Length: 122
Image (tube, rainbow, N blue to C red):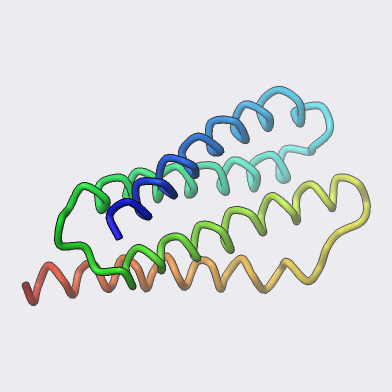
């Protein structure tokens, strides 16, 4: 489980840097300020939780459901934001992605709640 957390944490961290640079440079002229801010929110949350996955990956007693909650949450939350922003910038908004964002947020909250539970009831 630790290796999965480290692999996904590293991958998501790398992609957050790439997407952040892409948003700051390539998309700056294409997106309005609200869209750019939404894109940046996706990047920030992705990076924050990539770091959490790396920290969890170095913990030898990590529970798989915590790691999977964060992985699923990052994917649904951040990547749905990227898809929504990029599709709306091209005037072809992918509306089916809308419900995935709060679902991803819910998985992130679940991951944090499970982590809290683990710390309290060690």
